[in-house]
Image (cartoon, rainbow, N blue to C red; front, top):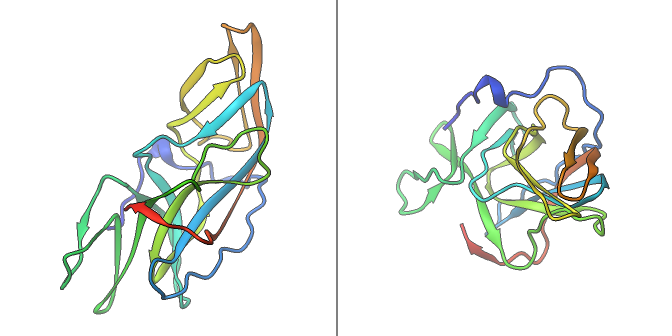
Length: 195
């Protein structure tokens, strides 16, 4: 399932400053789990997260090498049936007779919001089967909670994912997230609780 995200979800074509480390190769073994790790600088922010059901805009590539598919939207609520199997996946890419799949999965006690105490925090996990994410395109719909307790819903990072600012009228102070960086890596010891 390959779809083009709505224009509002497309990241600006200009280069953005971020620290994209090489994606870990996704081995063809049972339950290879790849996490998206993020870090950022906070001012008066308690947490940053993607809510459940968030649409992920990613570049994906075959684990064994091959063409990258850009800005593929992975919808965790979409369950696509696999040919010759009872299983389902959120994303299925056909390569001849083979099906490569990727799904958002819940991992017990490992996936968490990014807080000021974190260096890198894994905010989402993907079960990769023959394909892997190589680039994250931040879009919209994220949630930020200020240190004053105000929740900012539908945070839009599509124009400039490295800077977001607003004002907490409850605490009477500015809030800001800057220098957002991200990378993909194997989530070691992951125990999937739901996929």
